[in-house]
Length: 268
Ligand SMILES: Nc1ncnc2c1ncn2[C@@H]1O[C@H](COP(=O)(O)OP(=O)(O)OP(=O)(O)O)[C@@H](O)[C@H]1O
Image 1 (cartoon, rainbow, N blue to C red):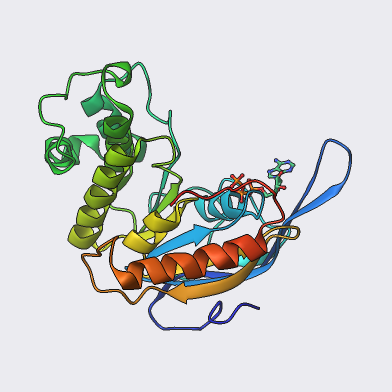
Image 2 (cartoon, rainbow, N blue to C red):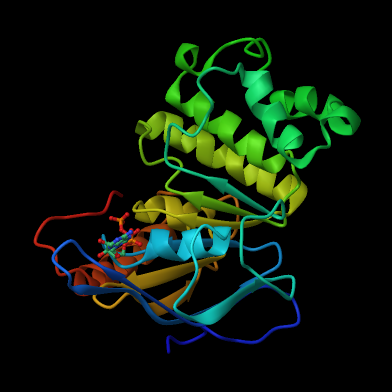
C-alpha cells in the first residue's frame, strides 16, 4: 500500500478501502482498472489524482460518484457507503456536460430542480451566476458561450447543491492555457469560500501542484496508488518559484517511471 494511503483520521470525509475493479475488454481479457486501492480524503482538502492513461483515475472517480460499483472493497462518504449518485457529491466532466437546450441560468437551476428544492432556493441561481462571473450571460445557451464559461456553469450547477465533495474529471483538459489558469483561480476561490472537498483528476502536473493539498500518483496495469505527496507550498502559489519547479520535476520523474508509454502524456 502506498505510504499515507490509509491514514485513518477522525476528519476523513471519504474512506476508500481495499477497492478492486476489473473489466473485461473486447478481446475477453481481464483489465485490472483498480487493484487494492485505499485512500482517505480529509474534509475540506483539495486532492488531485494524476497518473498515466489507463491507471484507473476515472474508474475511481466514477465509483466515488456512485455511477459504478467495486468488485470488492468499500467506498464511504460521511460514514455512509456509496451505492449510487447522491446530492452530497457533485460531478463535473471534461466538457459537454451542460444541457444544450437550456440557458445558463436554467442549467444551473437544473441542479436544484433535480433535488426538488428549486422553489425554496431559486434565489441561489443568481448568486451562483455572480460567483462564477457570468452576469449578463443568464439567457445564453451553451453554444453561445466559450468552453471556459461552460465549465464555470457546470461547476456552479454542481456547487449550488452544496455538496460535501466535488468530483472533477479533467474539467480544464480541453481549455487553452489562459482560460485554464483563469478557471483554476476561480476554482480555488470557490474552494476557499465554501471549503468543499475537491477531488480532481488531471494530466496537468502544474495544475495539480497549483491547486492541491495532496497529490495522489497512480500507476497502471494494475491500477494502483503508488505515492501520495503533500504539497507544502504556501498559497497563493507562484508557478515560477524554485520550490514549485522542484516539485514539478520530482513529480514528472515519478510519472515517467510510472508510465509504460513511449509518448509524453503530461502537460506542464
Ligand atoms: N467499461 C469498460 N470496459 C472495459 N475496460 C474499461 C472500461 N472502463 C475502463 N476500462 C479500462 O480500465 C482501465 C482504467 O481506465 P480509466 O478510464 O479508469 O483510466 P484513466 O486513468 O482514467 O485513463 P485516462 O487518463 O486515459 O482517462 C483502462 O485500461 C481502460 O481501458
